[in-house]
Length: 297
Image: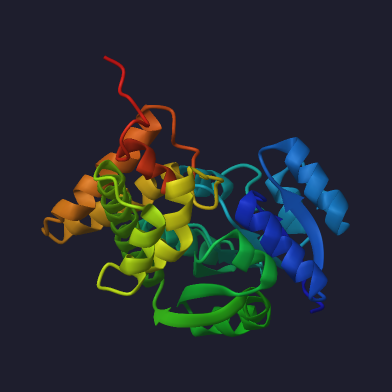
C-alpha cells in the first residue's frame, strides 16, 4: 500500500474505483480527467492533486489506472510524443481498465515497454455499485510480473478475477461478454415490449421469465427498469454500441457472421442516432415498447 496511485478518467467507474482504493488504505496522489471540474472535485475528495498534464500524473505516481472511453482516448493519453503518460515513465505500472480493441491494448503495452514501463490489461465486468464496494469481476491479461505487482491493488477492487493469458486476450473475452449481454438486453426489451402490446401483466411476465429458459442476468438488472422506464445510466447505450462493434470487428477478422450481434449493435446505434445514447442500455426498451419512442417522419 506504499505505492502511489493515480487514476486517469474519473467518470462513473474510475471515480468509484479511486474511492474504493482510498478507503482500503492506498494513497491516491494524482487525478486526471479532461473534464477539469470533475477532476478537481474528485481530487479534493481524495486528497490528491488534480493534474493539469498527463506527464504530471506520471511524475506523482508509481501505478496509474486508466479508465477512458475508447481507443482514440487511449491512443492520446499514451502518445509517443509530447507530455503523455509515457514521459519519464520508467518503472511505472499502467493498469488499463477500459473496454478497448485487443490491438490497442497490444499497442499500449509496446509503447509502455519502450518507455521502460509495464502495462496490464484489466477488463472489468459489473458496474458502478461493484466498483464502489470492491466486488468487480476482472479479466486480466499481460505479463505475469505485472499481474503480481498489480495484484494487491486489484484484490481490493475485485470480488473475483481471472488471468486469461497474454495481452489482448482479456479484451477479446470482454468484447464477447458485452456482445452477449447486449443481445440479451435487446431480446428482453422485445419480449417485454411484446408482452405489453398483448396486454399481459409485466410483473407476472418477469416472474415467469425468471423461472424458465427466458431467465438471464439482464432480467435481474434491467427488467424492472424497462417496465418502469427508469434508465438511470450504469452502462450507456453508447458504450453498448461501441462494445458490440468491437466484437463484430473481431468476427470479421475471423471470417464469421454474427447476425444477432449485428442486429443488436444496430439497435444501440439507433439509440445514439436518435439522441438516446446516454441512457442506460435498458433504454433499448424505448425502441420496442408500444407507444414510447416514435421515429420522426
